[in-house]
Image 1 (cartoon, rainbow, N blue to C red):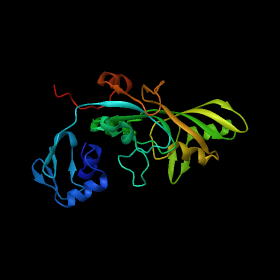
Image 2: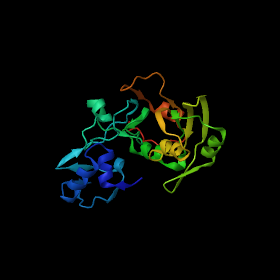
Image 3: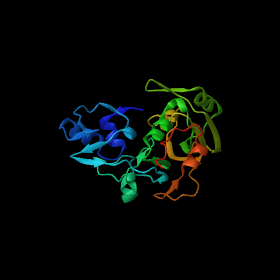
Image 4: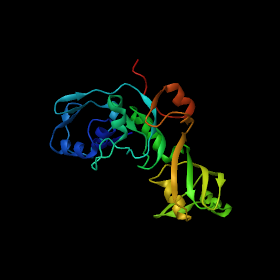
Length: 244
């Protein structure tokens, strides 16, 4: 799937989106041997040869990991506010990886990272409805009528946000603990949904993505995922074809 050149450089972990735009406009980027100065020029990252400042950027070998994102860490390659990033924690193991979607600063749990941009695009396409399962704590007691509203859809900032499933694990007048399944992964979707029905989210952890489970993986740790595991966890997933 074609993406803008500046986004391709960011997705491939070569430059941030801002720095990529600057480099492209300055004529420092070549695609298949030709200088490109339009940051929005469409490219398919897996099918082109990209050079920055005359240096060829080789395609990274296929690699996918499950990472347990801790609280207080951002899902960007560089943060202008100086906050720790997922890539800081991965260190040298971050080479070529891109995050499949994002978890906000206060959200913990399962984050998938891959060198396969085709897989990342497939995973984040709302048409594929990849289920995302969260353990949630909210203030106050959740009522049955409120769960019905979440299942039917609530309005937030002009968008209709809908839960696929909501299960109450424990509830009191002080707080409620729930297991919530979504199928789109929009920006701050869980928090916005519960705000729309009058409950603030105090704890949010993603425990499953498709057929992949976080399990007992400790915060800040990660594990490798094979192509076979991806095929089992996400039937129909589109992946890069092995080079050998």
